[in-house]
Structure formats: C-alpha cells, structure tokens
Amino acid sequence: MSEPRVKRIKTCLPLCKTHITSDGSLARQNFPFVVEESLCGVSTLLMEGSYRLEALAKIFEQSDLALPRVSAYFHQESEKELERAEAMLEYLSQRGGKYCNKNIQRPGTEEVCAILPALEILLNQWKEEMSVMLEMNQLAHEYGDPHTASVIKSQFIQPLVPKVKLIGDLLTSARRAGCSNDSTSGFGEYLIDRLQETLTNA
Image 1 (cartoon, rainbow, N blue to C red):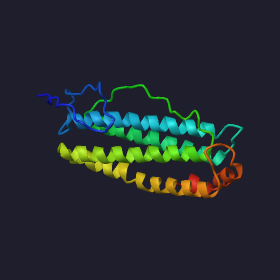
Image 2 (image 1 turned 135 degrees about the vertical axis):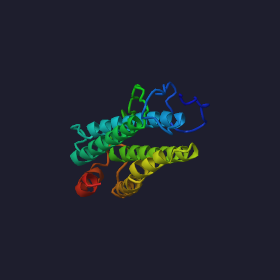
Image 3 (image 1 turned 30 degrees about the vertical axis):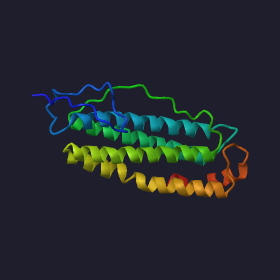
C-alpha cells in the first residue's frame, strides 16, 4: 500500500515542488514523503553551492587576480560540496526515495573581484546550509524518522561547524590585512593567499 501524500508543509527548506515520490520502491520503509521531498530539494541546494564555489575558484585563476592558493581552496571546497550532495542522493536512494533532476541556478558571482566578497559569499552559503540542515533534522524528528535525523546531524551538520568558524576567522584576518570589496588592496590579498596551510588543510 502506498504512503498517502501529506499536505505541503510551511517551511524554509528548499522543497522539490514537482517531486514525484517512489511509492513502488521495495526499499521504502518509515520514510515520510515530506522528508524525501526535502532531501531532494536540499541535494540540489548543495549542487548549486558546489557550482558557486567552482565559479569563485575560476575567478581567482584569472591573470588580473592570480591568487592560486585561494583558487585551490575554493576548488577544494567545491569538490567537497559536490561530495556532500552525492552522499545525500545516495542516502535518498538507499531509503527508497527518488531524485528529480532540476536546473542548477547561476552562481551569481559575476561581480566578485576580490577575496573579501568571495569569503562573505562562502560564509553566507555555509550559514544557510547550516540553517537548512538544522531544519531538516528537526523535520525528520517531527515526522518520526530518527534515522534521517541522525544521518543529517553526523554527516551534514557537524562537519559544517568548524568550516563556519574557519571562514569567520579568515574574514577577520582579511579585514585586518586591509582587504576590501574591490581589487585595490593587492598586498592584503597577497598575504591571505600566502596562508597556504590554513586554506588547503581546512
């Protein structure tokens, strides 16, 4: 017997509004529709985050900026973000859920030309993800799905905590070094780029 479709909930989660549930999956057990729909939407959010970070990496590869370690850091984080999206999709599949292919939005980084706004974009992105994951965790608890709640906490919330702290510290360092929202503070950006260990081992 298929699970009844529940009324759409009011939430800040990036739900998949056109989601088609996999009622016929034999692997499906105690997997509420709203949780499946939310996982589908959040996985797309992570993919968009990966695309945005890769776009930032390409900006710092350009000859007029030439900050290779900063570029390598954003590229590294883009790959990690994509791995997180793939891990969520794999979990969705293991629970008998279904992913609906959607268009990935433009990264919106066209005006970025300095480290400071790039770090601010990254910090805001991870704060948004943290908020989404916390709500996803609460939603799973409310709908009687403790397994999803546990996975979200261990694989998606806990790894974000030190990342948010790191970028907050880097933003403070960038401002103290004289970085600005444009490309005029070259020496400050050079100093931040020299923080190779901090950037590449985060």
